[in-house]
Length: 399
Image (cartoon, rainbow, N blue to C red):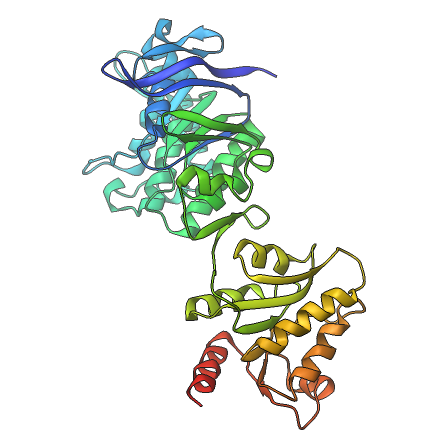
């Protein structure tokens, strides 16, 4: 495939002093590439060097196999657009006028836009979903709306490559998703290569085709996120303690290192919110019996809970059942998360039925299911929400 921009032995920094050394990168047409790393790791320095705003301390950057230092600024602006984190301080300037600045490399000495330039600007505003903002004063727009206009301005340059530094910072979740969807659409439909730095791990992992992990002045790893980001990778990258990145979910989970006090009968994702709630409340948790392909297994394992598990698609063994019953016996109370009941996990219901004769079972099932699964004399307390579960637990502890 066609190489749009590449870096070979690149040392990026300031005043002839490298901040990041030995960067090797080859960005292909239509790729979305993300730089991830802690603050001060050098992500912005790399981006500014790739953009030609900083001269390489060592090595070289090539745009379509041409050394970036030999490309004139005007020709570079036709091949590459840059969107940085600095806020534009403009007054009495419309969003349309800001977007139209992307046509400067094409307008000649007097900077006048012709009919074709205006058509391109309007199309770019349409692409980013900002056509209705065209006549608004740029300074009156929200951060998310401003970012759309700046991307429209970049598109108006008709570049092969767009470089963005933290394009989703200060945006709410709605606008973060919108901006990443716009960039992915540009890469997929128009073949634009996108290189950006992001702080939002879950967004980066789920939206970028290729990532570079930056730490301690070097590229720690690079490749497809599915290949290089495991449960320990993000912890090592950010030196995180007390949390683990769950590569299945693409998110961080807070660890719970307390000895089990509560047994949570879970499955099919019903346990995850209960695990988090109980962890916030300060309780140690045991859970099971979970098959190893169950989403609750992955969450519980990431949170370092005590997990009684069984091999995927296998019937529950006597050893697993005995281990779960031991955890149940030691628990002060039990939570039934309303997990789906099937052939392979029916023993979980049987264990709950036995436990409910001896200790409180907080069940999130419907009244009909509670009636079907539990006996009248059992110690079952129905809860219908996480908030009610918390209230009931607090009340139980006071007794």
